[in-house]
Image (cartoon, rainbow, N blue to C red):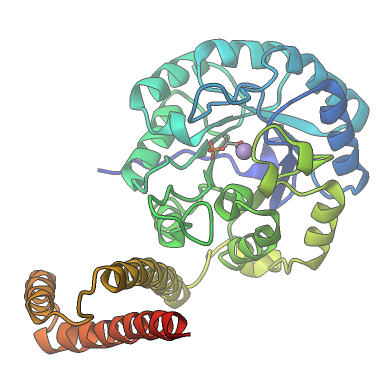
Length: 369
Ligand code: PEP
Ligand code: MN
């Protein structure tokens, strides 16, 4: 069962905030100079209102840079005083919350790894009882909408009404063009369930590389998401975390100038009309289907090399029969027509054979020379 959320719109969080909300700043706080240089670079362009930075970094592997810790809270006081930007940090424990509030941080966010754990979220929610501070909740690492909603509900029950979700994509086990699979249909689903809940896109963690950030940011704006949180570093090449995906302040400015923002009247109320929502879900699924076909083809090529080296024929009837049967059975369970699955597989299989035959021929020619 889904609860209704009691939401205060972003424009009412602080005076001067507008829709869509633009947030930018480094992945991690590394030094006072790096934080100040980045903040001034961002503030100078006058478009971004909130400075983000990770000071306690939840790293997947030990031994990687974990942020400057609570020392950085003093740097953020300087950022606020010198630039007028609001400040936002990631919190994962009640102690982080206490320290961040004590230091006058304006907005808190909860990272993807923390959202995945209801015990942590419950502790955070308890620590936030009676505190009036905006909280943004990143989606969990895995594409589990219920877990994301559960975190939002726990915080809302604890009295946090200045609440937003951050869509940062989902971990793909297989390598894809992007670092995280966007699965826009999940963000759309969340918006359909809670139309008043602001959803901010983090294009940096979805893209994983700076050159792809604008494309993802534009997609988020086309879907009428409510803001962007972009990783920006004064010198990304020497960043201690997420170096590849961070923009310089100048690149951020260029991107913000080139993005097409929808007019508030069309973006505000209706999100996107129903047909558009369906189309966006289909687009996202097609994109994932093509990524999967690409991954399948990489394996087909590896098999081609293996067959070549071990003198195995490209086509093996028994294997093909098994593929057909198991996929048709699987399709039937999902209500998909037998002929349809057969035709589709035939197409996929023909292309695989063509690729493997190419590999064999190429090698034959090379060795004949
Ligand atoms: C971050 O924003 O730097 C971060 C750690 O992101 P996520 O929680 O989305 O992985
Ligand atoms: Mn990061």
